Length: 157
Figure 1: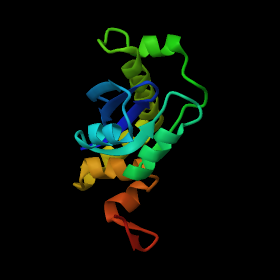
Figure 2 (figure 1 turned 120 degrees about the horizontal axis):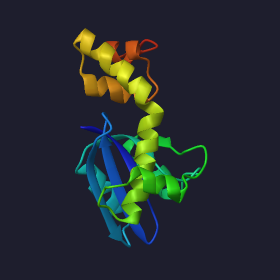
Figure 3 (figure 1 turned 180 degrees about the horizontal axis):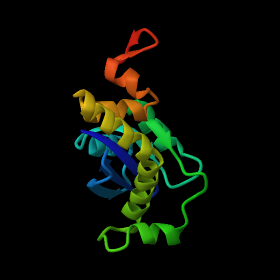
């Protein structure tokens, strides 16, 4: 399964994973978690195509995770305010760290939502692997390139 991952780091780290339809498929948090725990938690769920943060500037951990998984990094134009995070996580029983990670993931999903919908529609019509096409489009391939498996004469991995 391809996923969009929201990360909140600090004394307590949190991971929230969304599928490519924007559904929450996993949440977890741990005090004093290292990069190994984050990688393991994410890997159990799926293959990240985006690693997202709620801060305008992605920190070192977010950048490392994106590099490890060969995923795109998403950070909002401005830090997401607590008021907005509360609104996003309203009626969801999660802690503040998971709330921040959820906000990051939702912002990232919303950023790519139109491309994801377009890719899904075209992939469905062509009979291609819908999830893979969505993932490749997020990774900056055109829908046509993703369906053909080629980019500028080279095969896409």
